[in-house]
Image (tube, rainbow, N blue to C red):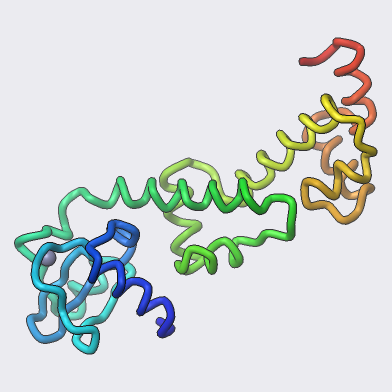
Length: 190
Ligand SMILES: [Zn+2]
């Protein structure tokens, strides 16, 4: 784990914020006890802390679950949903640019693997599918309600190449962008 991520999680432990609850677990080397980042017990010194991305890993290293914050009890669901919601927020804010799973994961300080797994568990589809749905919905809105040229619509949803955009759009909707726009104007759609 790099120092910046460690510091960020450690700060959340100091402030007892739920940001990393269910995402990382706090192993305290001096007591051999593993806690949630939100545990109300005395904050351990940073030099005695190891953060684990799963409770199982901490248990395998010989840690016992804290009796106070009970890291083994169901708390995983809510934080997982919170992480998934954070992913949605990043996609919503940045779908117009080049956005990769790695970039989303970096902006949320989790591993791409962890993010993908948690997101799919919560939603049943992947971040990549969500990104595509978001771009498609936005493209449809622009085609239906703006006079923007197809090339501009393509750029607005993260496609540098209008022909790639048109091919993708046709594959998804069964109509080219222009056909879709004409159908909306003609009242066939919407
Ligand atoms: Zn605890």
